[in-house]
Length: 83
Ligand SMILES: [Zn+2]
Image (cartoon, rainbow, N blue to C red):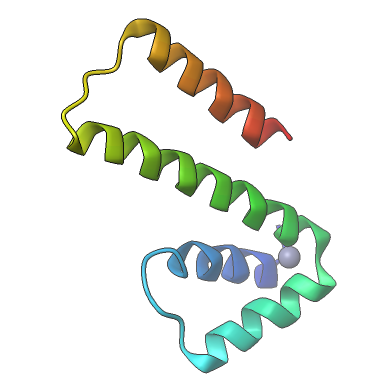
């Protein structure tokens, strides 16, 4: 992985946790325009984040997932990350 890609993958993951500075956003988006690997990474990251958020939401509602539901969720996660 190139140095720029490593930095951008970190920025992409930071962006889910905090507001990036203008400079960081610029760096991220310019690199994403140029780099297909980082674009793909970012899509996977967002899908994973979305799925984890759903799991967390389900847990916070104190819903206990059945074995079947858990397997379905994990299968969906694998499918999303694979695509
Ligand atoms: Zn890259």
